[in-house]
Length: 367
Ligand code: ATP
Ligand code: MG
Image (cartoon, rainbow, N blue to C red; front, side, top):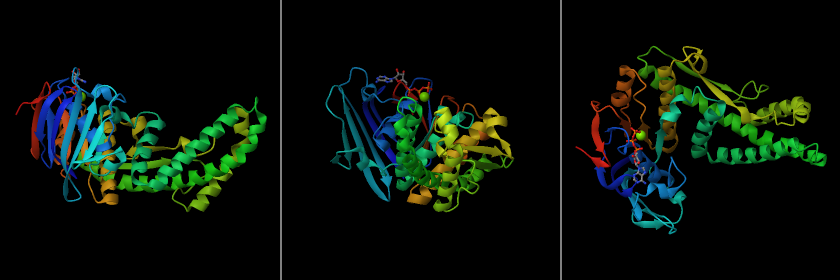
């Protein structure tokens, strides 16, 4: 899967822009505020039908312009297709087009251009709270496994209802009658979540280990540890067994839940830990190690996406170089040899040996 070329009219700081992309690495170089991230944002928009930095589509339209027109030619499943989005200032709804045919919903563009985006906020995901890592896992699995997405949606719904019942149980004690049903549904769906997460993390670790090993010149060995509900000893066990373990945990925490008026049992607190040479990155990882491990996980996510769909997503790396040492920078610029990669950076002396360098100034290509 790759982007052949992109043209933008009236998108962010791009008035009229046209650029062809290399099938390998595309290094997008420019000073601050010249439009590098805007370029990745345009590609993401065509890939997902939604912006990644804002929910307000009007912000995407160039100041003073009436509309923004984004169009990319992409090679996808051995076919050439074009993706186009037109956004209007004012109330007129946006238009989405696939190879000249107008489409009603963004779902109809799904899968034509898959992208994996990595931005500066993601660099420290391994140091942050568990919620950020769960989001990473949920985002990847919801795209890949419809059964997981459905289980997650149901689990979250019953979790919210149970949490409300527990919170209000003094004022509305009769509602606690609903708890057995909620517990049953949470255990059923929770078993699916745990088993899918555990299997995915095992595959992710295998791929990420290879990338991280190359990244660190073979000095660091990466592994992952999945952390879920304490009664679950084998998270890859059959669903029936996971269900039984979750019920067991619910029963042993039923009293504590009523007393604390909080939902204490279930995989909504799940986390995973990344280890380098058996030391926790969260606790001991240096800045560079933490960032490298996070990029390795993203590369692994892309590999697994390919294993499932047969198509390697385009990798978009925004501003990830500056925090890495020269060896690790070289890895990002010159060693990711599979598939198409777009990397933005500010250092004007950067070049890639295995693709093209695109220089951007004030919304224009300088080459
Ligand atoms: P950095 O290296 O700092 O990350 P960048 O090259 O990634 O910089 P972008 O975020 O792509 O920069 O572009 C930012 C510029 O785009 C800002 O100067 C901003 O004012 C301008 N910009 C954003 N939205 C619009 C818009 N709707 N119309 C015109 N200009 C815009
Ligand atoms: Mg930027």
